[in-house]
Length: 314
Ligand SMILES: C[S@@+](CC[C@H](N)C(=O)[O-])C[C@H]1O[C@@H](n2cnc3c(N)ncnc32)[C@H](O)[C@@H]1O
Image (cartoon, rainbow, N blue to C red):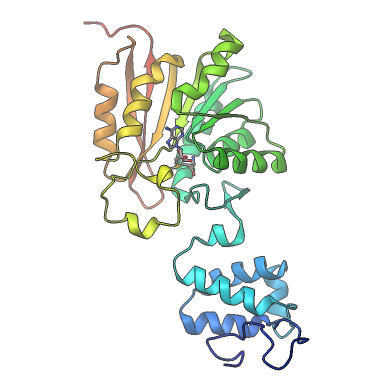
């Protein structure tokens, strides 16, 4: 089918071995995308990645061939996006809290909802009188939360943990490209902090801990639609609360007295997370000021509380 149709010449040379790989122009590509039901904004983002040209140029020069091989690459991108692959994986990045982050299938595609957690963290750090507040991001993935906090609060000393070496490498790359220094630690939640214990008491306790852990139940019916993203970033036990339980139960060992733990969770998990904060911790101390925050669509998306090292008055 020619380039006005819904299929594109793959570039293989039916007419002879020396033919150049097929090229495509923006008008043809956008026409195909429209006929196949892909939103125009997605199509423009894919074309920008394909051609390395800004969308204003693509629109102004929509009859200019984008170069040899672009027809085949366009077909591949179009098919993958229509099959549900996240746009961020196809273009290799995503904007989050004003930062362009590297994003690939090793990391969760950062969601706008998570900016609620970041804004809350920045607000708390803004009230902190410490010159160098110590901040911890557990389950950093693309580094979205850690890097956004470091960007907004340059004086903060930020540590970020993840169990996935590939995720941590992705986050580190973004940090280096953006010039945002963060201490990246590989490991399982609190165990990943062992190197800090060896460094000494100065970094032993944090002024703020934040996390967007996996929180989807293992049989949740929405999971099949998310199969492009790492299971480890999404699923957390029978009821989705396994990671949140571990984080709330042990955070007291790592927080300064009066410091906040802020957690993102599912839209229907706020009550369960508040209950976790109400469970007497094994390490002594207790939680106060249990507070919720809404995401942009108005769901209770985050819950946090302050840690007091003293036992509650009986
Ligand atoms: C929901 S994703 C959040 C990613 C990122 N913070 C964000 O908001 O976009 C959860 C992250 O937790 C990490 N994770 C899962 N289990 C972990 C564990 N036991 N210890 C440390 N990180 C873990 C996953 O690899 C994943 O990157």
